[in-house]
Image (cartoon, rainbow, N blue to C red; front, side):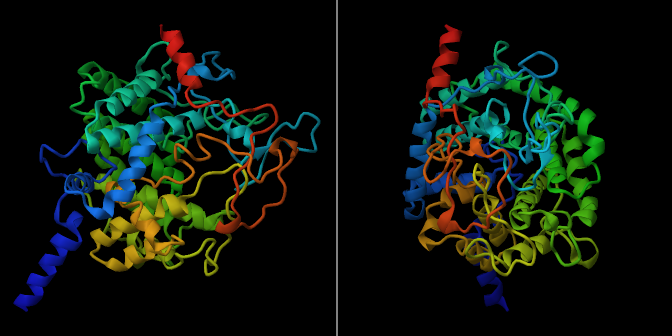
Length: 481
């Protein structure tokens, strides 16, 4: 018995070091982040310092991404040509991704829905894609600064953050009331899915602590911005998402909890995380599958997406003493049962054993939670539950097992893997490879089931050319002179 206990202790400390260190540690070297893994960041930093061979490939990838991020942006809501209903470009504006012109109407209005098929208008001249670009670039630069200690990365990240959030000439108003408009139907709403990136922004700010580039005034300005944003978001959206069991509701609760911790309101954070325990009844079925997401055209992708939101909430829960990793309601429903239902179908995509509809990615869409988010959840589940089977399931998501190791740095930190969101991917550099012009499609063509082997990247619509890297930055930098 004594030998068994000693063996278990060694496995906990050596094989699953995350499980042996609480996320609430007050160790000075740990950054003030909330959705990222604090202990994973510390492990990554220590591994880089000792030249851990398992981190070399992902370390090189992060350095390259950070170098690329030095030359993108800055981004601002005032750069769009479209004007929100208020007449003020400082207000955030976005289009619902799955709505298209109605071919039966001369002017196409009102737009009609087509679940799972992204209208290419979605990424043109609205604020949603610039916000994601800002998040990806800032997170990359801040992580590079934290791990490698190079001030120029922090300086650039600080510049991007100030431009979007703090500079009065370019800042976004801390409110979202015109998100996901549907032309001809409504002028937008406080849709929480657009702002799911904000916890990653907050964590990037945490990684910049100690840099000469990020000042006390910057920090105070961001806290003030998020304090006002939280109040506006709750006033507009809380009744909608309070008891809902959807992925959007989970992302809403995760982002409000992260923002609450950032502004020092632990009570609000605790409330948001505690609500999730009740929301599980309408989120996870007795069979473990997500109740709402199983009915989507991309049900496997949306299930992975919802899992990532619950993973964020479980990570956040550690900061306020709430355990969502192991919490269950009747029928053992909880995060683990939902994870097991999805993890059983890991492997080549799309999974042939998945019992619900999964149409595959469609032209104009870089969203891929199966490969960008599910591996992160499985990696941390292996540590949380001290079960290597979850990590093996994560490896099965990659065609080449070596590719899993190439992402280890990102996996440790608990952030989405860089796929087409890479600084060299579709999100930043649209490509015309293998596609006819999407703008020639008056209505969406039938959904085509796609596999990894023939996923292609869409061309920009006619007359829309991808802006050269650095050109937006130059425009705003010239305005600032």
